Length: 149
Image 1 (cartoon, rainbow, N blue to C red):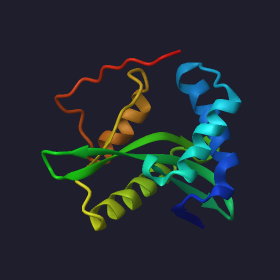
Image 2: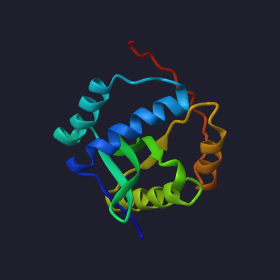
Image 3: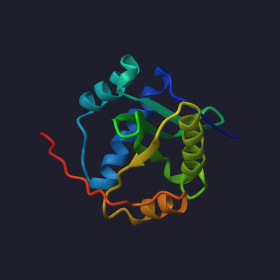
């Protein structure tokens, strides 16, 4: 049976593995293991950075995602950003993300969160279709970024 729960420090290793796999699958990026390890661990050391959620099947972690926070002065509330979504390939197209999204949305509602947002790589049409099927919309915002190497 699939279980969704907030991740604990014991889940760090599979989350790190998932992040490395996701970076390669979506952008053909090889992450520096030490950097991603410190980055994942930082969330558990400092909960103001975010929170990881996992899905597990018979005690095995099969999916994870990260929630980070954006303060909305317009809404006087936080907006949760869904990031770093990864589902093990053998479990894809089986409703795992849908279940995680539903769980996260319910948690957001209980906590008075203004809404959920995410960004998706422009060529990842499969993920875009999944998000649209959940009722999410690509609105009037366009994302710009600056990232250091």
